[in-house]
Length: 311
Image 1: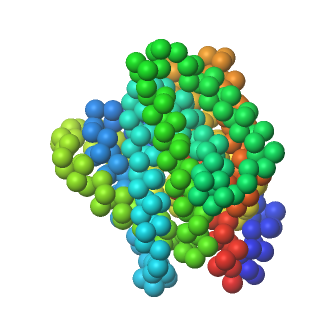
Image 2: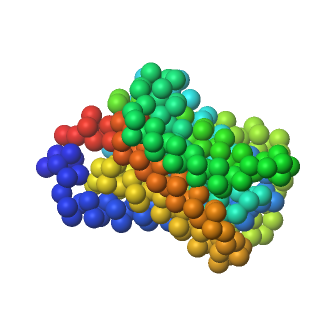
């Protein structure tokens, strides 16, 4: 049976949906660990995230031999890695100063930026239905941002939006890479380049973690790796269109964790914003063409993998 055929079976679609929900549960847990590690320098956080994920996923990436990791597109891998690394760093900066669910939701607004990145980068036209979804989504972003002078005094929300833009660039980069490189190679080079790039900044800002901080850093790396693995497995079983609505389960999980751990309860305006951003993001993913597929945190896009590498 080809991988493409396997994707179309109802049983695999159900399994894929369950896997993607679990993947975004791990993302929410990873994000919560990032918020808990607020006293750890951001560069150190992203170094542990990338380094631990690299070590944990390396055996998986090498399971078919080192030849699977060969690539002729290192510059594009570098663009993808740096934009993804910046997205994660900006997210960890933002989540220290704002509610977990708001930070996660704003960085998950990446699909709203993907059509603009694709327009500039590949001259991909924005269709009418995608444009309508973008309007809906950005209205939601404004409801969450609540533009005022206070936003400039505490720009955490704007930093989270910048993280979403970087995530969108990473997603489009992965989309282009996936036409030639396999997911294992894409993840390997992401975590390798991210680890190397973040190491000097971590060394410059290094403070030795104390006590429970070691646990937070370990959790960030472990749950990041788990999320990536489950996303790969999910997208091998179901299409992006089928999985898209489940991508935003991360917002629900983050809201529950934020409520239980930090007592954060969003007001009605924020809830309306969350609904609109999720709706706009799903429209962008489903109707945005190949450039819009994938999941919103900028670390995976397997649609073209199935089309190109099915056997």
